[in-house]
Length: 287
Image 1 (cartoon, rainbow, N blue to C red):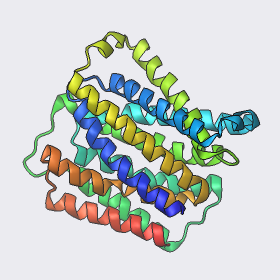
Image 2: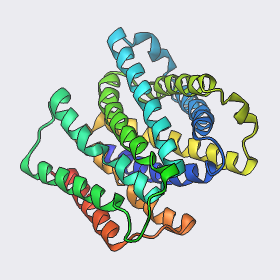
Image 3: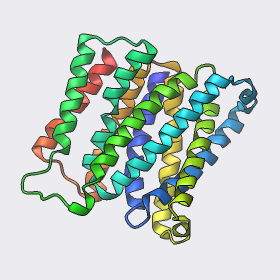
Image 4: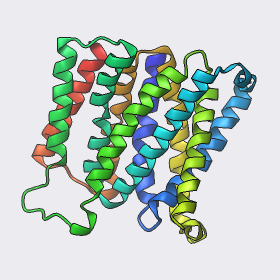
């Protein structure tokens, strides 16, 4: 059953990037992150009420709560960096870097969770890494834009924090009902996101958010909430080294919709990179 949850997580994660991109064309990325996190928080706690898992919060020990909080902080940092990158960079370039967090996750799972690293898994890691490099390479004749050159730094940081999220989340949800764990983590992310808005003096921009973009931001939050619930349910029942790669296949959904919505086309080099990433990911699933 965890495999179906992982696939569902992948789909909703894929459309999240597209909806978010539509919502941050003119809206500040930090503000958008804070707004969409509010939607996810409401959604996640509603699920806690529906499943009746709220009473379990008193049974969570200090160590587990600590890892849930750390996982939430890592998620918040990943989101803030990701949407900064997404606002200034092409979806087809930002997403592959973010999905490359699979490689770091596998290494961290080996170190902290004792999940094995076989020869085939090593080959898969190389394929994912090589594919990512191919996809983020500029097209021939394309000139870099000075005002947007920082998107890659944010994309890389997003991948690093996403990897930490998976590992900390795996440790933190041991013995915790998945919906409750998601709600607790989301509460941490919400506090972090709005604190960032307040510290950077962007609170006034919340009221200035374009209504059309607000709709997309809210839909993005809803899609993320659904993806999270599926993802952490799968992570609770299945191995992190398999669940995470399946979730990263959301890149296929994102690439498809980026072509339809934003008319972003893949060059031959990027297409080869995408094939390499998918091949490496599928290899991880069946290792």
